[in-house]
Amino acid sequence: MRASSASAATVNSFSSIAVFLSVDRGQDTEARAGRAPHILTPLPIRPRPGNHAPDTHSHDRRRGPCRTRRLRHQNSADSTTGSTAEGIPGTTGCPGDVDGGGNPDRVPPVGLTHDGARGLQVESVALEDIAERFGTPCYVYSRLALTAAYVGYRNALQAHGLGDRALVCYAVKANSNLAILNLFARLGAGFDIVSGGELARVLAAGGSADKIVFSGVGKSREEMRAALEAGIHCFNVESTSELEQLNEVAGSLDRRAPVSLRVNPDVDAKTHPYISTGLKTAKFGVAFDQAFDTYRRAASLPHLAVKGIDCHIGSQLLDPAPAAEAADKVLGLVDRLAATGIVLEHIDLGGGMGIQYRREEPAPATADYLAPMLAKFASRRESLIFEPGRSLVGNAGLLLTRVQVLKPGAEKHFAVVDAAMNDLMRPALYDAWHDIVPVATVGAGAAAMPYEIVGPVCESGDFLGHDRSLALREGDLLAILSAGAYGMAMASNYNSRPRAAEVMVDGDAMHLIRRRENVAELFALESVLP
Image (cartoon, rainbow, N blue to C red; front, side):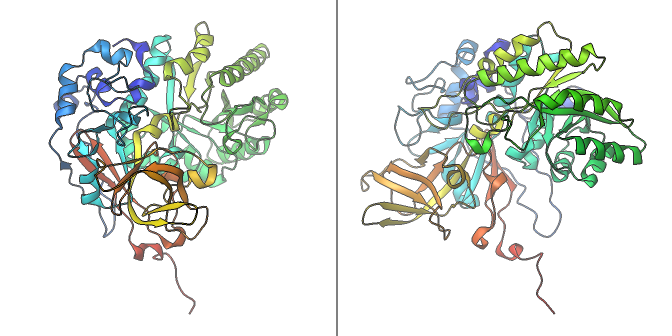
């Protein structure tokens, strides 16, 4: 496969990345022989402490004929071009790959397949089987899709000759499950963290401390100390006050803290205002017109080592132009600093690349989105850091839920499901769209009609989708797509609801990577007055 071929189509296709990696499961002998372990070996489950360890057994399912046929017949040309089956964007080589609702006009996220009898499948595991084994609501992720997304970044960097001097740091806030962190660590990723808790998670998952960058506007002294003791790669500092505090903490440990400044370039990311972070009105970063003097101050502090510069303008960006504009402003500042003797080693361009949530809003291919930025570095010496989050995990996960009640109303019909805003906050918080599709083939007894897809939480804002035309019956399973990012990570126990289980699919096996909470755990840390 050509290095430049990584694209959104690859991320949306399980089979493309499988062919690229020449899948041969179970090759653990490679690791014992001193070679890198095969990244598609069965996913190990880290035992959890306490009395409620999860079921750590993988649950194998027979490989579906559709997947077998794709792996057997697809050639490398298909995988590099993202050729389609049945004219559906993002699928490869298998008739019947649809969105689960039988609508060939809708882009199927992460290569979901539908084989009729078994309904929707992730890789080679039927969602019906996952619901039967682990219940609902339940988050479901694909190891293959996660891997494909990461490889897309690496391929784009290699295509521009930057693979050896670039670090892809996964933004942990998007989804912090240990199994996902462990998978990215195995693939060679670094990590972008924003708290001491995320630092602990990354280290527990096997991440390398020297590949961690620590962002965030309000790092505590305790968090600074823990990160210094762990030996992280760099602190992305966001204020003069933070510089002073970090200098004091590093001095108390007789160390020099590696720092970069997060510079706010005042570039409009053209995204939702809640996730736009690069304007001068944002709480993030050092104002661009103050950055030069702030760097001079940082360079004067004895316990800081100025290493780089950081810039992040927002999230869910579909147009690379704002990021390229921000990169130009950053490079101008880097050159100005170098002229005064402050020579930076790395440039961190943050993350923010968006994903496709619906057909009407196509997302760019990874290589296409990065190209305008990467072209600027062909003749430069600095190393690069990127901090993708959503674009690595968003389309690799879904939320599986079951219809509890169909409730006709005077003006609207409601489908009450067992997932709610506490499980997936994005629709209520951002009015965000997620495709919602039936898992099973629609039977003869149900007619499609517009439904409000709502949960049981006592809030009028508890909705997962408005005005969705679906043929439903009580008890039907629904898949809420593109839920791998900012889904479980933002989940809560509102209305005293236990948080959902999480399952990773790896080919024809499924692994419980977080068990469902039980009711007793909701108040286990609380006590009554004497």
